[in-house]
Image 1 (cartoon, rainbow, N blue to C red):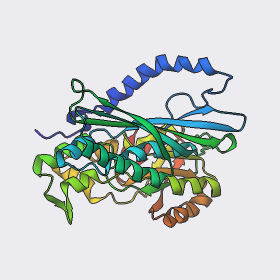
Image 2: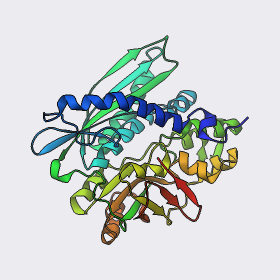
Image 3: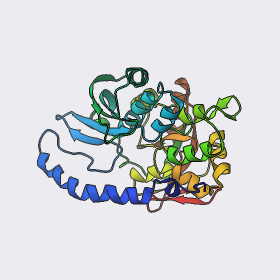
Image 4: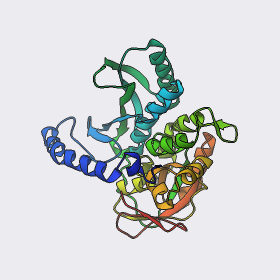
Length: 344
């Protein structure tokens, strides 16, 4: 039986949120250990990256993320050259949400057994992602865990830096601000458990599922990296908030402000999202709760700066457009004309 929701596919976002809250209840107490010292937390737990005070002028942004079940597609297809780009993207896109410049990264590769060819392909992708994000990969860890891992797992930790006066947290967001959406490259690295199960329930990896694109190409399209355009934006434009659209879709906007959002000018989602919806008979509500639906990153700015955001993004080959605005409300994202309401 085909899954019709992300939870039926095996990933329950609600339970995941409860698990995170259960951990934060304990880990949040550790923030007091560095209060008033170097390393003091400036954002608490729950933002896209952790922000800690480094000096009287600068803070470090720190983030950890992985590639997830996209690795199962890579393993089945025998193609590992792009998942390293995803690893860098998932970390770097979170770091820049705070206005921070990514600096360095370490990776963690866990394997059932060492495979030099596979490790080399993964590293090639990481190096390409690092070039795109402007970061150095300064170390890492490879662990052989035959009793714990079936195949591979890949994760990484990234560190960035930001001047205290340039931190972007979302605190300055006000009703009337414009939300500019930056185009995604496709599914990115979230919702793959559902996307993979639906597409591969009807097709082989080598089947052409969209014009000129095989199933493995659709599923392994690497996550877009938004570092260059975002760093220029925070230099040129009055940015009030930024959100990386990952797990939970556009509800990620709720992580940066208590205000609400009305998104009524979203771009048409890419063909892969229509394919997934049709294969599973998935409701439009579930699609927007699970996938980025064509928008991989959002920048919140005063209305008069929206056109400049679009212009800067175009310079780097990234499509962008105003997709909605901040409204009076309580931490919800309303998507029209679909009538979808999201909460993080």
